Image (cartoon, rainbow, N blue to C red; front, side, top):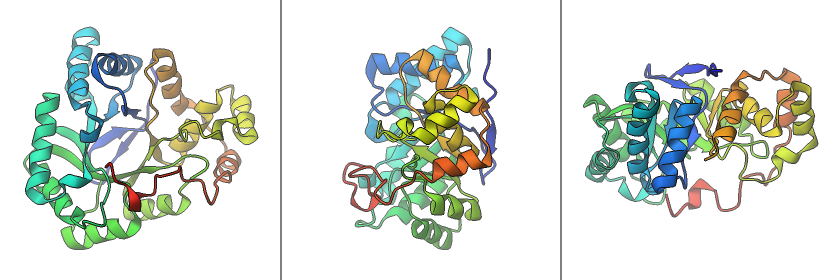
Length: 284
């Protein structure tokens, strides 16, 4: 049975599915197998990064999936990200090209700046490089990750273009109500990394379990449905075919407005995961 995954049209006209596979720590042979499995289960959007050191595995999975199940590269949305230490214009250009060499691809469907690296302050220059590469056909859609509203506005003012999407930490304990509002106002699509909060206990909340029971789904599916109905693209990660399919099927669950509000109300002042403040990232 196929899963009917909704599609979003980004502000640059590129169409992307409403759920994507996160590939952090899906590396090597096991990573390739997990990605191929996800494509077989119906995923068409896979999210990678230069720093994940699995762009090569992603490219190999794409080629294997075409041989095994006939899904062509053109049917997939493949994403990667520029690390914070590579924001100088020429470095950004070289890094994108290196990413394509690693993956054995001719273009990225979506390419993001992994974080703004505000202490260095070159993210505008990096964004301009990606926009220029988009014009050359090496990137179809240019986005960002972990950007705050002021970073987005600066890109608009200095480059004249807004990112197509912003990938941010978002889960029931950190629902990002204001960020979603700003993104919608600007026409920037939200993506949710760590949509389940990395086992922070949100799926054990009584509200989540009650919603899940009411719809005959698992608590994880209830949370993923909450993401999709709020207009954000969740990035659940799993190497299990059964769990991959279960996650994807969450797009078919429709929650009521009251249920959405009740789950959003789980947000906490300290809900952001420890060490994940974008202003203090070191590794990205």
